[in-house]
Image 1 (cartoon, helix red, strand yellow):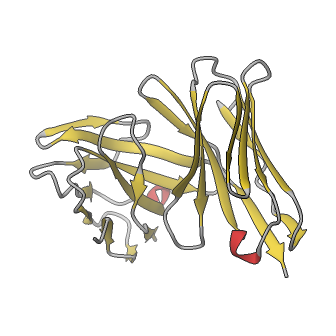
Image 2 (cartoon, chains in turn orange, cyan; image 1 turned 30 degrees about the vertical axis):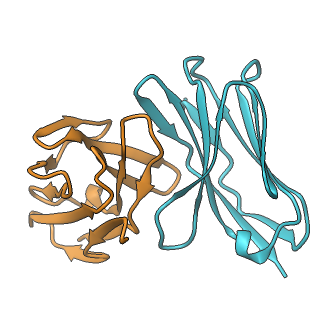
Length: 112
Length: 109
């Protein structure tokens, strides 16, 4: 049972480049979400999904897109990377909106 | 002002010490209170989950909530080097979940 799997673990981008952070879970969770973690800021919600085909914005959605075509996968797309998006990104999932969250191991992203 | 305040530390203690980690909050709507533990280069994992005021104990860990003071605590008894991690408090009110910035704990052997 792999839980929540994120790829890649590390990524360096140049300003203006685009990329997709991958997230997959094998627990049949309906709820999936993306957070970014910055020093002194805590975890901040970027986007979330309550089921396949349903997504919504969190606290800091600008510059990011998501889609949820299957229950298992919830990719996060950076459209045009900016240095302000340098952060550690975590994907998390749970059975429901208010249930226990399971986190992936994170993607450390640097935008130069 | 942040909704949830947490001292970033680092907090350094000798092995076997009792550790107290704390968070304060400003939103009276928060009803569920959680503590997550995060090891270096790993994702957070849920450690304790409490509802309303009072204490909850799980092994060496005790979570305490004082809603009248808007103050929550996590106590770790007989701390071990393996407890060295960042501890995040989190609070939920309705569909809103807010995390503290985390306290770095170092337990020295």
